[in-house]
Image (cartoon, rainbow, N blue to C red; front, side, top):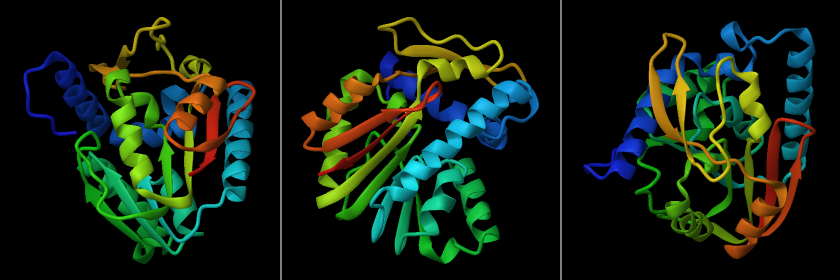
Length: 239
């Protein structure tokens, strides 16, 4: 997201990218409930049960052929995708995230199926069509004033009959991180803190099930949207 401008809204996007680059080394601790993200056996069990529900849902989703993953991060979902598709292209704005992602796929013996590009996802323009696009925990970081343009580009990257798969957090998921408060309703800028105490301002929007369905329909998708009982919202949409 290397935005070159003094515009305050674009400065937030630069800071958001810095946050995820700096967070790369601790990101997996959040997903696997380790370190400061370990909230004890009971709450962790709820989290992992819902993660398993997400994984089962996407095992059934028609993700095949040449798939594009947006904001691939450390490769948690990349590994699952690469094990089942013919070819996978991963885009991310962070060199640190891509390095960890590539290492994970190499360790799993899946690196030959994956190609990587470090790109500003707000400037990205698709150069080809894909059979499917996967968007994990990224849509919530797209500001509302850029959302329609971004989804238009996503739609233009998917072949007719192809699939868009989305997974993201509900507002309740913020409660799984110590000392984190969700932004109030209608506010999309929030403060995030790293383990070393540094703070960053980022965009974070939470989607209700019907809101996400209507959003995807507006951009030409027939979407099935579901939520887990507490932490996640996910969609499988056909163009």
